[in-house]
Length: 195
Image (tube, rainbow, N blue to C red):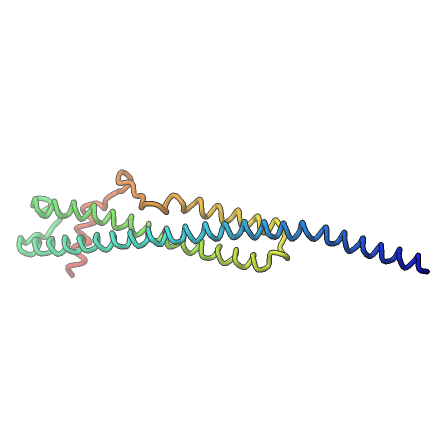
């Protein structure tokens, strides 16, 4: 009986030992996945801050452009009124008005581009905020998640980071790709704003 009891204890010891051996790699794997997610969270936070900085810069430039746009529109309205300009052709015949309209075309085109950039930065920031929350949640539940779920999240985070990383350092607008508003449309816009 004593022999049987020793054998029983030995088997239990072996089972507990094997269970512990199998648990250590799982814990180590969980730690590596946690560290990977923590690195992704740090990347997300940095990129979010950079996008917020670019958005702030773009908003500052946009505000200045809108101010210039309003000044030019006021000047054109004044010239229209003082010179009695009623048509687009009459405006084109006046050098000062023609110049102001050309300048307004360029400013409006850049205003549109900066507005697009601000939307892009905000969208990127929102996506990163969402992914940050998912990563934080996954860290809390790391022991119950499958590797594929964590890998899918880290891949998704990497894709979003790569999409917005190029936009994070400087505001990128290619002046060659900007298409100014046609002068006739500017004239119609001015006519609407007069009324």
